[in-house]
Image 1 (cartoon, rainbow, N blue to C red):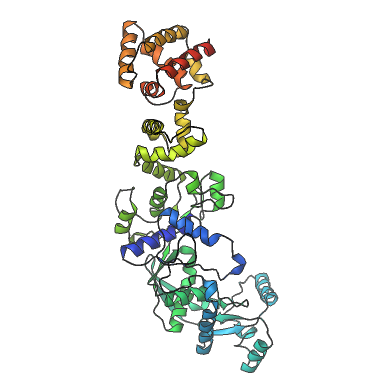
Image 2 (image 1 turned 90 degrees about the vertical axis):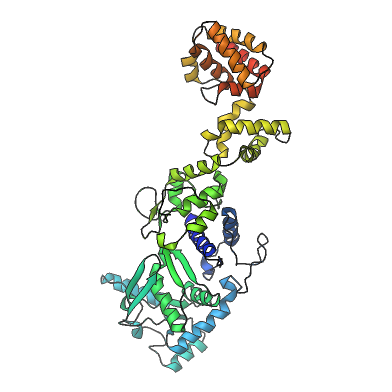
Length: 494
């Protein structure tokens, strides 16, 4: 499940919660050739991390417990015997038929059509010329089945009909049935295709709304015809716009993320790093995904999940594709970071600091980290940025910025720094405010310019020309450490 699937799930979730409905997860695994080990649990874990867990779904997951709403199983592979009954019903009604054409024969027809500049479509135009129960007698058909010949069951699409379909987002859609092919509903391996299984499950599970990606829009005509053939009322459909590439044309793909350096999966999958592992907050991911293809009708950009539930409507979903903006996703994460308390962020940062050998378990140390976070968080996009922004609080610099040295370590700087050491040694109350008052008074009394003292001081304390208020840094690392760093720099930069 990539972020396109997460957005689809999110819109389903928002719609369901707004209307006091249930958000349902169904595992559509009828195509066993595409089965991927671990994919089901990945989907469940991704939805849970995003904060949009399903109300009904697979009930054997150790991580989610039972969520069977009375319509299980929610894995289509466990319902395959059920689908065969409905496929047989369509045959009895004359809406479907057995087809015995081999893959080699179908490939021959496709290539033959291509050489003539045509497209091969298996439908009313040629089905009586192919090997199926419409072109064979009942006895011939039964003989083939009894002999164990492979067959599929195809839907019999009507000829010369005009379908009028309804989509909540796209409005009224008109389809000429003459251009439709007779889709396979049941395969030779005993499994249904997505088309049959989906319609049967939606009906039996009392699905009211189907909200899915635009790529399924071409299947809407078949699905509506299947509902009509069974005599069932169809759910309402809404087909979401595609998420487009950041640059160029086309649908967003994993390759775009690899090329431009941003995640396309919610959690890490194989060798692809996910949004979670990149350091994104799940609330930020949900917020930016909500505004990909939907707009609230206002200038507001930051929404909590409860706010999204309250104002979401399918009528405000765009028809056209939404361009993905990696920089905007970072902006969202930064906004959510600033909204978190210093204590919350400090707890997250402690995970990094522990690996660096810093003991956050001590209350004094934890309070120090909280204070440090308060000083640096505005400059960060991710918690992982904190170390680069604050390493000098925990370890003395081992080198000094070449650019900083060239620009700030002028003649006379060692003498001034030595004098400053004497000033710092005399200070008992080493709070930021008190140190600032005393040092600035000393600078004025000595007739020095602040430019000759403050930049070199930052250079020797931090190792670079970065960081928050220098007196906050001095107070945090303490008098002895401040003096030790100044003396070390004087020796190193002579």
